[in-house]
Image (tube, rainbow, N blue to C red; front, side):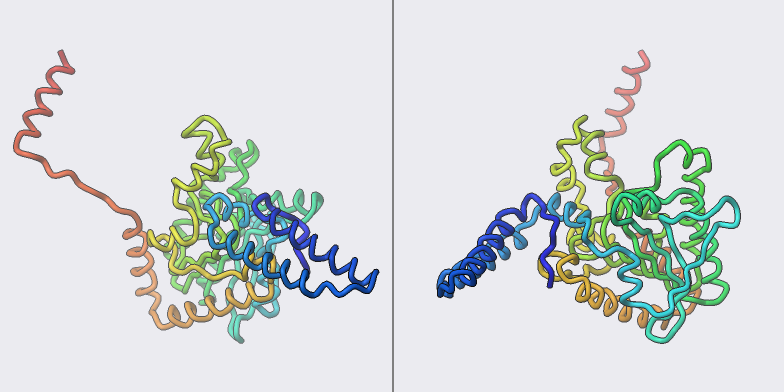
Length: 340
């Protein structure tokens, strides 16, 4: 396994120890010294430090892992898990959006339809992919492929990884809210199994635009949120520096989302994150998709739609305050006082 080159702030103590180990081994080779005892001590310390760091990650640190630039992206998972992916282009209205891709593929020998948000690696590719932020043509392309999946009875599998839909003037002029809303309606009524996997960032309506599903799976260090921690901090505390506090308050980690019933399963990542072992991460995702797809294929189209409706109706908690005997009188008095 190749050591990740990009180091997050909380990983620096671990990287310092790894550099010490490499330097010690290099010195041993140059001067033909026996340093096995020293090497063993550092290796034990590295393992203890790694265990301590990743057993006590904060929600904000998990958000940082979700955004890791070496983390596997949608096309990496598609290449590892599916066969014969045939990308389909264009929304038949305006053009093509490279931030939202889709097409047919084979999973375990059977045809499926794929939708995915795709980020880029490096400046040139990120500009082409618009940093993984889809625009209206992308969502309308997704809508077209959803209808194709329904027509040919293909299960729909979507990979979510976006900071959000593109918020620029161009997107507003092309009615991005309407495009996303149309997708929500279309996905809610699809007569085929729908599985969504959050593999990195799951930001706001941009993620939800391909995320109405029978089963929502989320990788261990991914997050799914109504808004980014920075945006929430700017709204609540008028300062984006409070993003770690916002992340904790919003309960956006995989474990929190499963506990709250928003996500159906948390998929374990290799130790240190998916970027440390993309092959194992892909295998974990494949196994989860296979299990859930097998379960969903047992339902009729009608049952799928009913269950999907009930799933979203049950998310969240509503508490109704029962009126006390004197409550109405108190409210009437308060209303009269306000009118006067």
